[in-house]
Length: 287
Picture 1 (tube, one colour):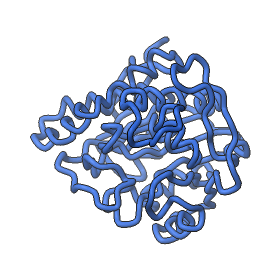
Picture 2: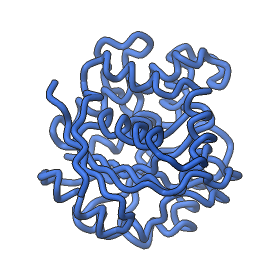
Picture 3: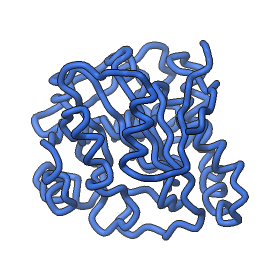
């Protein structure tokens, strides 16, 4: 594969997001699903709707999410709708909780653990996908970015259990850890292939706690904000974000690096590269 282009700006504003999207040179066709992280109730770090609003309006998109598979304020459709309203998502665009009415299966090619990915049924209503991700740490994955947002993020509640348990239907928090990371990369493949040439990805490197936006009680960030990145390749984008964390001279990065390495987070990227649906080789274009 050729190197993917990753556009980068140290400015973190809604206007920067629009600028980087424009630099991608893509026009997302038809009805656009905009995947965000709705944020667990109580979390202080998730990227707020007002920040994403101009980008969502630019593509005339519908904000999409799926229910979680653990206790919290997003594990049922009723609770999730209440959270979407509480956090202000319904004020900036139409919202679709895609597994509200069930799920569909997407095939996975060459997966070691998964043969199918279970995603929210309403995904089939969209022609293209805009993935707006908050790059930060994660208690299980080590970090979360574009790949996690299209794997776990688009999976139905049952699909999340399927990925976490690596298709074994064991207790999802007791499954083999590396197998879980590999399963995330496998499930992401099904989304990339569902929308060939019709996905754009934007990562925001701000509020980078060691914890995910799915944590109601999350640690405060110690590393300073880095910037906004955009690409048409989710692996290249996440790899560029990781590289920027490691290249930072901020001493506060130590906790985030420790979280990533203690969870073997880069293994998800290794697996995505091996599956061949995306590349970790990139050209960073600073704007």
